[in-house]
Length: 248
Image (tube, rainbow, N blue to C red; front, side, top):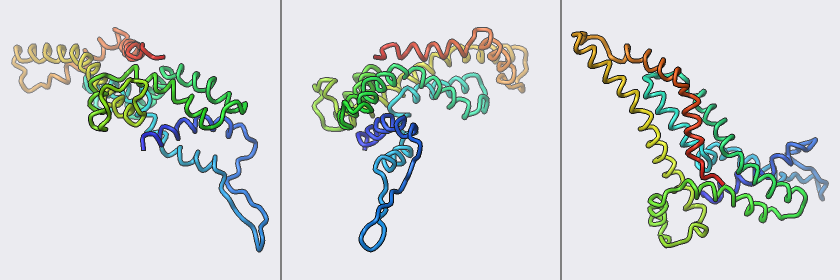
C-alpha cells in the first residue's frame, strides 16, 4: 500500500503538468464499433483522479509537513491559546513551509524525471524510479536509526540491510515515526520558556494571596509580548527549516 501510494504521488507529479497544459481534458473517448459505440476511460485521467484522493495523506507521510504542523500545534498550546491561530492557518503555514523546504526535491524530480519523460527520453517506469531517488534520500536523511531498526523488525527484514536497499514501504513508516519524535523534542524545547513564565506568575500570585485568580489569565499577555518581541514566528520557522539541514 505504501509503495502504491508513493508511486501514485510520483506519477501525479510527472503527469499533472502535462495534463494541465493540454487544451482539452476528455474523460471519455468515443469510437465507433460494430453495433454501436464503445466508451473507454483514459488511463492517465483515471490514475490522476485516483492519486488526487491519496495526495493529502501521502504529503503528510512523505514530506516535512508532519513535523512542522505538530510543532506549530504544540507552540499554540504552550502560548496558552486555544483556537488562535486557527487550525486552517496552522495547516496553511505548514503547507507553505513544506513546499519551501521540499523545493530541492521537487526541482530534482522536475528536471531529472519529468522533463526527460516529457521529452520521451525515459519510459514511465524509469521516470518513476528516478523520481523516487530524491524523495528516498530526503527521508533517509531525516530517519533515525532506532525507528528504522524497529520498523525493519516489524517487517521481518534483515536489520543489517544497507540504507539504499531498504524498501520504500519500510522506509516510510520509519520516517513518520522519526518525524513524530523530532517534532516532540522541538515542542518540548519550545514549551520550557513559556512554562517558566507560568511558574513565575503563579508564584507571584500565590505570594500575594490571589488564590482565586487564574495564573493563565495573567501570564498570557506576558507570553505573547515576549514571543512577539523575540520575533518568535521567524525564529520558529528558521529553526524548523534548520532541522532539515541534511536535505539532499
